[in-house]
Length: 105
Image (tube, rainbow, N blue to C red; front, side, top):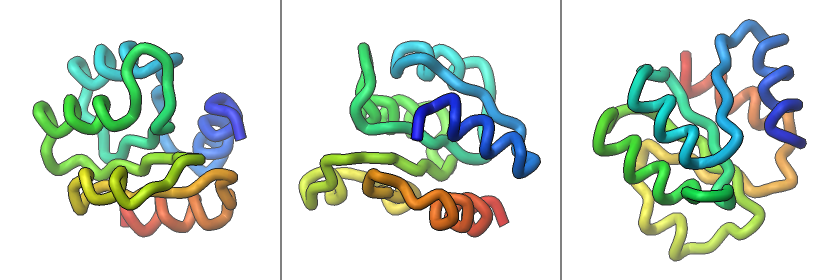
C-alpha cells in the first residue's frame, strides 16, 4: 500500500491525517504539531524511520509510533522503545486498522 492509499484509508475511517513525502518533511511537521499516533515507513528518503523515531522521542517522548518495514530484524526491534510497534510489510490492512484502533483507544 502506498502512503497516499494508507492516508485515504485512515481518512475514510474518520481519522485526521497529516502526511509527509519523506523523513525530513516529517521532522518539520512534528516540530510544529503534536500527534496522537505516528505511522512511518522505516525506509524513507533523507531521514529514515529510525532517525525519525529518535527525533520524535526528543520532542514528544510518549507518542506511539507504528513503523512499517519490509526488513524486520531483531536489531531494529531491539533498538526501539516499547511505544514503537513494528509491522512487517506487506501490511494486512485489517490488522493495521485494528492496531491503530487499539493504540488510540
